[in-house]
Amino acid sequence: MTGIEITSGTWLLVTTVGVLLGLDGTTWLQTMASRPIIAGTIGGMLFGDPVAGFLAGAWLEFVTSRHPPFGAARYPETGPAGLIAGAAYALSDSASILALLVAVLAGWTIGWIGTHSISVMRQFTVRLVGDPRVFAGDPAELARRHRRAIRLDGARAGLITGALFLPVVFSVRWIEAIAPGPAGGTPTGLVAAIALAGLGGVGARVLGGRREGWPPFVVGAAAAAILVWIGS
Amino acid sequence: MRTTRTDFTAAFMRSFVIQGSWNYRTMIGAGLGFALSPLLQRIHAGDPVTLRRAIERHTNSFNAHPYLATVAIGALARLERDGEDAETIERFRTALRGPLGALGDQAVWAAWRPLCVLSTILAFCLGLDPRLAALAFLVVYNVGHIGLRYWGLKVGWRAGLEVGRVLNASFLRNFAARLTRVNEALVGSALVLVIARTPGVEIGPSEAGLVGAAALAGFFVPTRGGGVAIALMFVALGLWWI
Image (cartoon, rainbow over all chains, first blue to last red; front, side, top):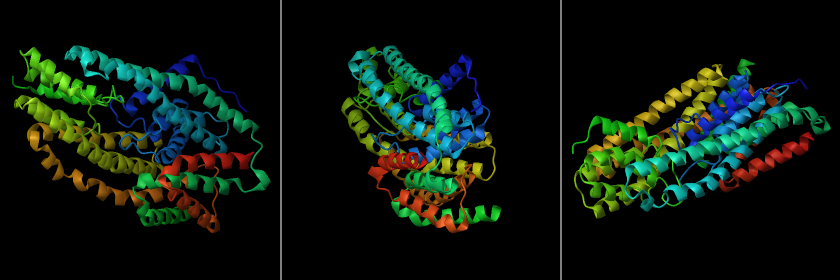
């Protein structure tokens, strides 16, 4: 395993970006910079490998898309999750398929941790703004409390990113170093392809739209497969 | 008092943080009041009692898709300016919640965003630099996003009480259905291409059926079981590897 060096400045930069991406998810702008493909690319770029970051983000996109934000549904928070997954895969020792899967699993888990942290935060937010009488009809008081709620969300996203970034990076590298390898001499590349196809398929239905949409899904997949074989 | 362009600009800018204080009791109620404030302060200038009542009214429970909340901002400001009574405004406010949520979810979360995400993944897989692909996503997606917010504010203000009828006749009505067909084809291509682009993956022509079957199996996992299926797949992979 080769060494990596992460300075406190780098950690601070990642945490700051995590704050911005966490805010973008719900409370501030919603430009979708918090989507995994963007957050992952940023995470990869910060460590010199935007391709690895984008790939981790793309897989996280498929996995997290199974939980769309319709109505009051709960769904994984993707900003800090994508950032950390992209950075962790970019910082992995050999950019192996194992490192990618562990980074995506970590991103998915962080996404759900983020969601639970939002639920906890909203218990505090309700105290700030949940009763219209607290503003006493004063626009200045309303603005003050609303902005405080936004800052609270920023602090939450910073806490998630700052606390989980280094453990995830080192976990990915550690698992890569100690994992003995696939059992029984099975072809790693094929099993990985099957696993990724299954994981991607789970999210694909929601990204595509409907369960009844499987025929165009199959046609699109077949067309792309032909393109790949022609290319190779 | 007559509203100015500056008031609308302030309300529009504030709409970008309308979910800033989302909570389980009033949802985006406080955010709606915050975004409406510049307009309300102008409309009720010189009448602090009416302004206070308007702020209290609009910070009550409300929810909508964040991008289409500008329709509510525009329409509610119009009702306030037209001097509608509190009961009419409250009824109108309640009636707006459902359509603005459902329309936005379908048009944006289920159609526009997946289209942009899938196109970006395809562009990357076909060789576009990931930084450019990400930048292109942000530009294209947000042209739609910001355009929708702007359109919503304009339509809401112009139509006032009639905004429901305008929304029904708008492009949003069939937007999702049209894009869904495109997305269904794109998602299959994007999945195959991103598998092929992933380092360490090897598939021969004879094994393509297995990979395709896995993708279809994932596709047909019941909606409620999605999270469990993903977790089980990760566990199985871990066991196999170790």
